[in-house]
Amino acid sequence: MSIPRMRLNGLRQNTVGHTAMGLWRHPDSRAHEYRTIAHWTETAQILERGGFDALFIADALGPLEVYQSSVDAALRDGIQTPTGDPLLVIPAMAAVTQKLGFAVTVSSTYEQPYTLARTMATLDHLTEGRIGWNVVTSALDSAARNLGLDQQIPHDERYAIADEFMEVAYKLWEGSWEDGAVRRDVAAGVFADPAKVHPVEHKGKYFSVPGIALFEPSVQRTPVIFQAGSSSAGSAFAGKHAEGVFVSTYKAEMARDLSRRFRQQAAAAGRDPQALKIFAIATVVTGVTDEAAQERLAGLQHYASLEGSLARWSALLHIDLSGLDPDTPLQHAETEGIRGLVDVFTTMDPERTWTPRSLAEFVGVGGGGPLFVGSPGRVADQMEEWMETAEIDGFNLADPIPPAGHREFVDLVVPELRRRGRVWDEYEGDTLREYFRGKGLSRVADDHPAAAYRR
Image (cartoon, rainbow, N blue to C red; front, side, top):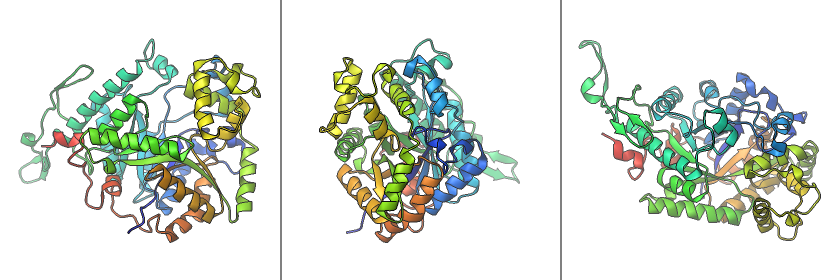
């Protein structure tokens, strides 16, 4: 029986502080170079050298301002602010790589399908089929206010908007231009055959798009669709649309429950549940020996920011944690939100008394998922065990001190994973969807909803 491949994505955001707060101060971190092309091209080349499927680029459209009802803590620690546009760094990375894919986060709540479909098709052309779209609906109230809304659109309605958004985008990507519409017939003077280009004629509750797509079809037509929401509406959306799902949890058994739910939703939508590839966020701290790895971890923890971690979690939970004594057990808090937080962390470690300080220290280096620490062999063991228990397909690996963390993983751990047959030596295929479906399969599967709009 063949050994399942461990699928790897790099996880970054076009910002200083993403999953690890305060570590921009570490002497090995070059996170502040996020605003330079050289930083991103180096990152892409590191990941491609390690056989990563893609670089997964997160994004946020508003500042974090729940903690102390202010943006100050986020600004001091560079938590998702300042942040740059994730779309604009992709062409530069594509130009210095041949195989690495790019999964980029864009919100369906604040875009129009007519223009975003063109943007994604353009990127798919420029990368020769290496583009994926992480569809999000944007939960930050600050984003809603700064993008023209008096208040946030209700959660489930945002997913209803997203569902219609996808329908329009699929019509544009799959149905507007037939195969062979672009003739480039010099003798006849015909570049595109009008008989093979069709208006999509969409008239729905949220969008009206009567005309043709402005772009000719790209290699994949529809980019690989990713999704990261685990609510009821989010998991149903993933089951219908997603080809890759991103989960964030600290315990493998909790990830397994999420994986099974997503696959059940895919089956309910009439899709092959095993076609859904599930990735868990994780952070790796490694060294030549276990002792060296522990020393590396201690060095990282020295720079972790208590206030920064609390500010980030305040935004994630929509609860201001600043009013709590950092050393008071969270069990004593009276709010529903805090009790929900306690339940999450107690499930992971019921023997521990959780305080704001211990929570912040726990997530300080590896926020969002498991922290694998040790020599290459020990890290590989932990990753294999977690992957098997969680019933996932691979990991989105964060880098707390970019790009050093990814480089250390590629230099030390990837050779061990390759020795075990977990990471490919050579890419099998040329497009991001081929990495999901197999060589020669760059288009969506027949059971994917986009396929219904093919001509």
